[in-house]
Image (tube, rainbow, N blue to C red; front, side, top):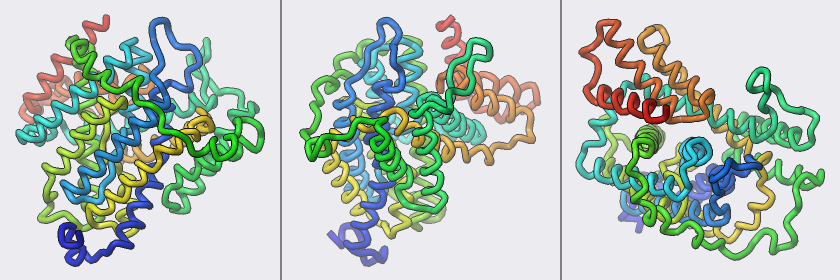
Length: 444
């Protein structure tokens, strides 16, 4: 084992790797509760006609299984201390845009995730993935990341009741004297304090403290005894295999854009995370990532497994840097993290205390972290600023990540051509321009 993971060469040992794996798990354990809550539209009391709610317990199990299998593949096959789980932003797109906004059944949405995973595998094995990524301007990549951050934070504020609908101004401030709103505000404050103090797993601990506060003030029903904390693993039956059963429903223009969005966001989430974690761990060689193909395969394979089990796109997590900071350098760190995800399967009863007010702070904080890419956009160039700004602002305003991407990608070639920079536009961008024009024509 030590030889396989090159412990001596990388200057690590079992104890260090174990603590690193535990640290990574605690830093991202919040996804076990936020993902089921998001996909099941817990913050939405009344669903539009024809829209059904995915089973929250099944999503919890699917989340843990997808995270465990994806992280195991990453650890054993690619040998990196990087953990995977259903991605924030992509789960919001799945639930709020595809299911709630478009009225597409969640079963068909899962089929779209499966399709994106299969395409991802093909692009990775053929080497086309890098060409597609390179075709997208860096500024637009940054804008997509920041826009998703703003969108997630907006959903968090809405679920918390801090921002509500208003007939006169579309949105307005909620009732800040409401006990449940005050609980969410407490969660935001405590999470900010924990993260400001650089406490590993601050988001997860913030959720725990918010749930405890809710129980103390009778805003959340407490778990009943040991059975309210540890219980049977929820059945996967409501979601397992639905992606395969409904695969034939994805062949529409609308679903094409959905699949492209799943694929596009996962592309850059994964690339950015792999580079960031590898850099921190000192694993980059000549500015290149060794075994990059294996790491990308782990990501795409996890998406396929997760979609079949019943969850949105699985991707590499930037929280893996927490484990690297604790000394993790090899794939054994990922194996430990995967083990904790499997162990977490038996704690599903805690879903009952993780209400919308408890998860809202996590959404807002993750939104803050994702918006950090704003600083990398070249705002001084108007031809870049326009599509970047429209990409960012239209995501929360239209309640759709896909629409934000589509509008930004339509304006990019227009502004670049008008500025005389036509030679800098990759042909792939023209293809996306046409696809997104058809997307809006279809929606109209």
